Image (cartoon, helix red, strand yellow):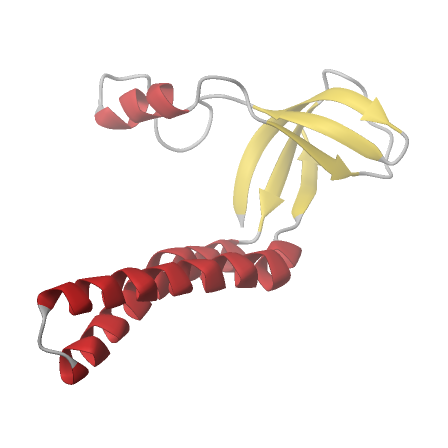
Length: 140
């Protein structure tokens, strides 16, 4: 299970809003001048807030640990990264069997990549997104 520290920033009946702590877990926690810190600063300009269902009473400012199972993350990564590439290769190989021009092969590869991307997007929203559940593990 992947764990992350978070702080409660808002509470409403049945839900809480959490702000994920910056720099306390994983890469860039040492604040050295490596590329991981540089990439984190480049792509994450604002804190990440998430809303989750919670039936326990939480106070604003309370620090908690949240977790998410790794298997849906791995499945989603494989689906999103590999399926479009595999479809692109398959379409280009099939086009290479039936045509002799490179333009047809390139166009077939682009069509295969697009179909793979659309299928990955549909499958992720329909099946994998339902498996991504954030759980409150403990109070800190």
